[in-house]
Length: 365
Image 1 (cartoon, helix red, strand yellow):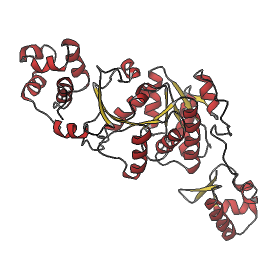
Image 2 (tube, one colour):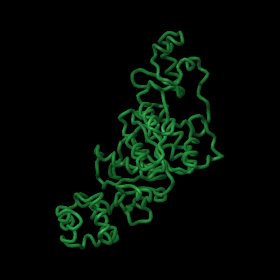
Image 3 (tube, one colour):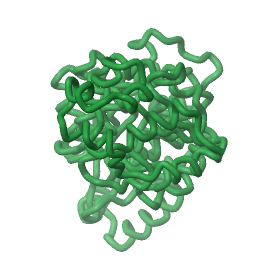
Image 4 (cartoon, helix red, strand yellow):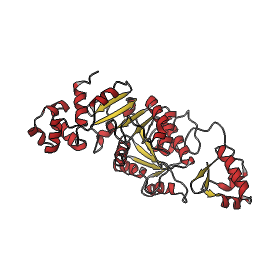
C-alpha cells in the first residue's frame, strides 16, 4: 500500500542525508509543507539552508530506505507522527529542539497524556529497582504515564511499574524502532508495544550509538511534567535528564539513599541543588497538585502494599539494616560465625528480604 503523498514527502525529507533539527524546521517555516520543499528550486532552498543540504534534497540523497519504512507501517501498531499531526506530543513543541518526525509503536493516546519521567542507574540495586517499580505503579494509578528510556536497571523497573498501573508507560529509545536495545529488554519491549508506547526520532535500522542517548534524554524531559531520579552515580546519564527537566522549568525529584552508596551520590547532589527529596509517591502528587487515589494502599516506598510480608523477623536483619554491609562486618555485629551468616544471607536472598551487591556487600530490602 502506497503512502499518502504528504507522509511520503515527510519521510523523504526526514531521511535526507544531513537534514535534521533546526534546518528542517526552518524549511518548514519558510515553505507550506514538505511537498512544497521538495518542489522548490535550488535558489529558493539555499535562501534557507546550505547549498550542500539543498543539493541533497534535490538529488534525493537518502541515508534510509523509504520502502523499509512503508513495509513497517503495514503493521497497524506502527505509526509515523509529524509536527503537522494532532497526535504529536504537544509538550515537545515547548522545547528548543522538537523532532520534526517521530516513529511510534503502540498507543497514540499516550503521546499527550500527563506524564512523569522516572530514571536512574543501569546498575541499580535490587532495592532501587523495587523502589522504582513501586513508585511507577503508584504514580501510574494516580493518572501519570511513566516515561523512561528502556535501559536496564531503574528504567526497566519503572516501565514495569507503569505497565502495572492504569496509565501505562512510554519508552523513548535511542535506536530505530525495529531494534531492541538492550537485547535483555526484548520481552519488556514487546509488553510496552502491546500495552504502552515506544517512541524514537531515529530512522529504522539506526544502531545504539552513544550520541543518541543524550538526544533521547531531551525527549524524556520534554514530554513530562517532572523527573524522578531513583538511583544515580555522580556521572550518571540520569543527571542529564534531570538537568534538562530543570532547564525546562519542570519539577525534579530525587530519592535519598545511604551516604555510603555510590548510587545515592547523584541523588544527593540533585537534592543539594534544589531537587525535592521524596520518600513517598504522595510527595510527588502533592507537588504536582494531583489527587492521591483513595483506592490505593501505600507503603513507605510509595507503592501498592505488598501482598505478603518478607521474613522480617529473622534476627540477622536487625544487624544488617538498610546500608550495604560485608559478611565479616555483619558476622561481627551478630556475634555469629561467618559461614553461618553467609548461609543465612543466601536463604534471606531467596526469600526476597536481602540483596547481594557488587564487592561482596549485602543490603536489606
